Length: 402
Image (cartoon, rainbow, N blue to C red):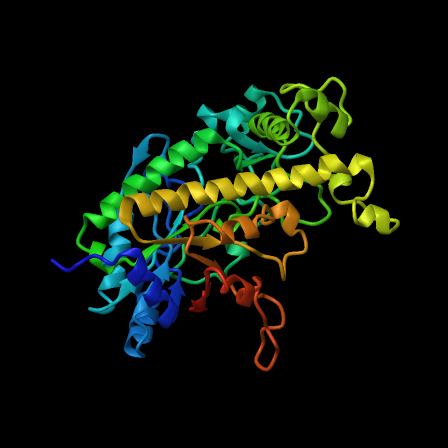
């Protein structure tokens, strides 16, 4: 049996070799089942995508990545059938292919029925627990984090080998799991640990160099609705997020009395806390003072953005810690979108300094910038790559066509 790659070896491989990405193994996200109770995969067959992997392998690219289904088909239910099939399809493309799987950890659609208080709710957040439960897996459930009239096919060109989405995603009132949910961290962490053990003990464990964890909108560790402009469906105004923000405030300011003073809420408690409205978080600024949030009343909105990034950072460290514990291999994620996402504060990406200092995370990744990328145009990165590389490794995707 070959010696499994440890984190030191994996990091050197990632530093020295290009990493090719494709749609191979792409699951519907969040996990969704078809009429036969099987997880929906976006590709009906893998022949076209396998050809890309064979071609890149033939050109000398041995390090490959793609999405790999977590197996999480429902609350308390795991099925690795399509996971194992993806591994077989990938490794059939080259005898020396090495793999860095990307694993999405958003909750399956039935999870919110069991845990409605753990779900993300959009502004104004006035829904009752039972109202949230009743909206789960209905047209009022925004499962992508943005309006998509054609579901997944709003993002991709339709091809004969792709599954056709039959669910429009518009005007949702709730999202998926709240980033403040401890229940999500526990459940998704267990799913991740079980998957890693399944992979490491399987026939390809010695060809997996590490793991990239993913969740949130597009799997890019961004809060639901954080990229939308003008609709004010900001997140997160759900139950667990409100309570967690209160706890965060007590931790940072030391007492309920100080918190009430700073946030200008004399009667504040864990159950009646007022969160900043979208208009407070993103005003039509009339002067420099409003732009820089210089007023005493702006502290609530400033702290809320900080809090949401803290919850995101804690989730990333939690999942990457599991990767290291279960595999002793490198761990990383998408993060740090400062250069092409104008609302990065609402996305939960204000914690880059903390993550750059974290021992749990070895690399950050990002797709290329999506603007000015035609032949001859300058293109660019979404992440300050040179700054990241002073402390961590930055991975730039080498992507196949969709």
